[in-house]
Length: 432
Image (tube, rainbow, N blue to C red; front, side, top):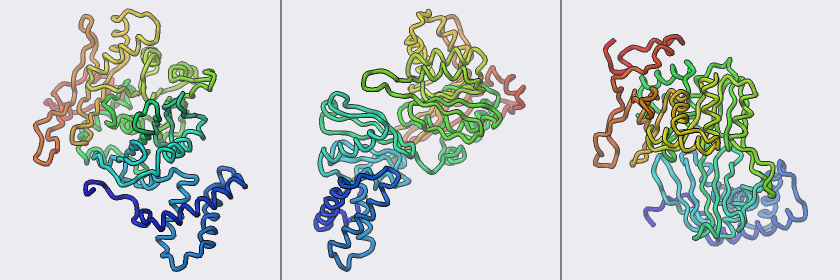
């Protein structure tokens, strides 16, 4: 057990305190059945009921910290997220993974850690799952065993229950971190260089169409948020997401979010529907949280018909893989366009691929900034402007290498200059 991260207070592992907590919960649960409460009043009133029940229990000389821990734990189980609240309140935890009732992992600073947090049983996990999805009008049952949701703070949630989750119900939470990441923070961590940051700022302000790619948990949404911050305040921005995560600072932002169909299959609104609708909303920029299907063709056509400066993300392992995935997804639009025509659309629409990688040591780096430079025959041509060159692994398992320019100036350099960005040769690793 020495390799398990201890998160649960000792108080909540004491059988006597657990028994007291159970008594308080049973008492207050009966009160809640007699007097249903509106959501906005829930927490304060239920907490007061718990305090009153504890006072009546006749437990004298209980230390203040122990009293608080028992009350807050009971409150979390009654109307909150149960044992998960210990982890949700931790600012250093970025992901929470529940594998059944007795196994809970977290990611902290890129490292995967098992914790001592546990649920009573699978039924306990299912109650918390329903508490997460029910307010969003979604349901999870054996006929609908998976669901995506989000917490009020913006954290993304995926749940799966039996029969698809063989070993018990699972919950995966990608936390929305309150500590706002900045480009300066990423530079301090070695994720990119000041020259790369300056180049990306110029590309966004010069209205280039940018595709942010990377593997799972590589920081694509974070980077989309940061790059969107360079969009001038005077422009009208329409954002489109499955679950709202982007937090743009500009004054003129319209946020659109998809909607799941109702039980009878009607009323759903997809990313593709929203992209089409956004084109009628007089956007200066369209920012799509992630493209996964036929909406990619609508996005490409928008980029090719005057909606420059658009940004989106895509799951991919390399910039080349990203263009291949775009081809496949564009075919899902059902327009029956020949592959060569789709490739020409991609080459004409996308100016830049910003590729992020979550490396084997858990660190995240911007490993490629790649120009989509056009077509050669029937092949989309790509040119790396910046690239991470890995040189090895240190004795403590850290990835070693350097982020450096490749010595190539992008073909769109004149567009940057027209926009007022005359970037010196030192940025690209060439003579001035």
